[in-house]
Image (cartoon, rainbow, N blue to C red; front, side, top):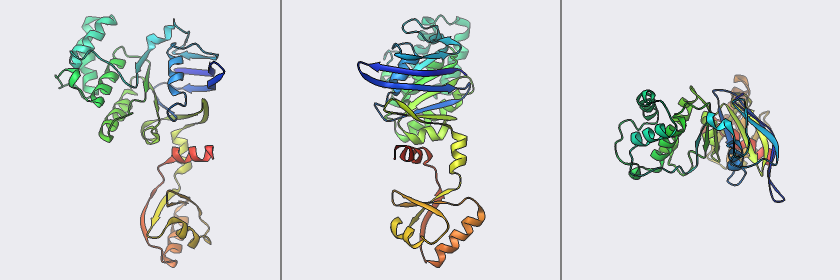
Length: 298
């Protein structure tokens, strides 16, 4: 495991911001840390970076124990804050060259590594100054900077926050590619982003982990659920289908139906035709994490 978090508690005054957090993050995986704004995600990241002292528990990264203010484990970490800042009078290549000098990277390694990273983040052909960059371009440059020294762990704090759909898709694609050379730990309050690329997900709510699972297992759990919309309200459709054997519930005026095999799906479709319900759309259930949150929080 690249990261081992054992019983971490962080208290500010009399208030527990983090309580008894346990997480193990395997190598070359993407671990999504999900929770609403203010849940404590950034606080845990600061603890992982040794920027805040722990009230209780321990954190180990790449075999090094994290110690407040003097942690050796940061040599193995690349970090992207939620709003990265840069010298605006450089372009992307110049800025990465400056970072290479500051981190004592051997000069003979500069060009190839910077070329690789600029290609990865889609800035290889950009020569304009950073002050002209969009929010998404700055996020992509921030990832390149964080990966410069080939860290064993890349920590990203809300990397897709405030980006448009195209910008979010670019960042998620970059993180997925980065998994080949590092382990990615990123926080987000956008559940669909975590579903799209993560291997593991943990949900933080009011400082406590309320759910932690491998995405492959979660997808298996939800693979038999289908979302139906009708020309009539979902409540009326569910009332008409009350005598069927299918398990159903309503979400956002859509009917979620559990149909575990082909025979169950065929039987359900026959029931629909007998009741003359007109189906507008059918698609597999994809909002897995959202449903888990609703079930866990009641």
